[in-house]
Image 1 (cartoon, rainbow, N blue to C red):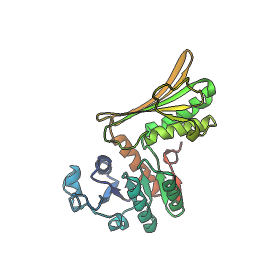
Image 2: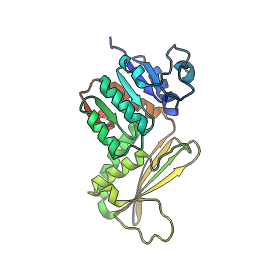
Image 3: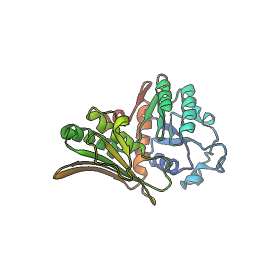
Image 4: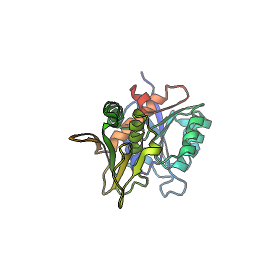
Length: 269
């Protein structure tokens, strides 16, 4: 009989936290063994089942990860950069795998991930959707085939509450395309246009950002040539697609040696 895998969630009161709790509850081989919110949150001490609408279960929301990490096999973190780094340090000290879905991590934060990955498995991906990660493979192929014969634009749309732009997924798509073309995204990215911009330079990769309503996440990469264009699009209609992928990553990480991984590793792509 397969042993139950115990997972802790940070940011339990957020949109993704609640959806992750639902994804865990739907799998008989998993159990939610810890739930954390920021110390000043009004939900500290609340029954997690009542908070997430899954039914009272006696598990209470904790104010710090170190209060619950010892009783878990893996941790999933969708919070904010500063909180994620604190959770990373806690998991490293406790020897627990960490799956990170936080976006907006800067270069220093990514270096911290690499340092922690010497001691624990760390899975970091801007998007945990299986479809998005398959799209990244398709983008690499399209960029290599089309080369310098096309103009490339990336259009992304999310709900009004998203605080970073462009999205981490859009940036990752740009990185994949730039790498396939032998370019450095930092040198060729153009983030929006206004005024008299002049003719478009072929080597640039444009980003356009939309924030509106309750859009879960839409991404399109446009490869436009004279006479034809190719569009590779992914649209998410539910956060459950991200939650299911993150939970899959957490289960996978419990069987891995220390290292820094992404969804390509989890999916074997």
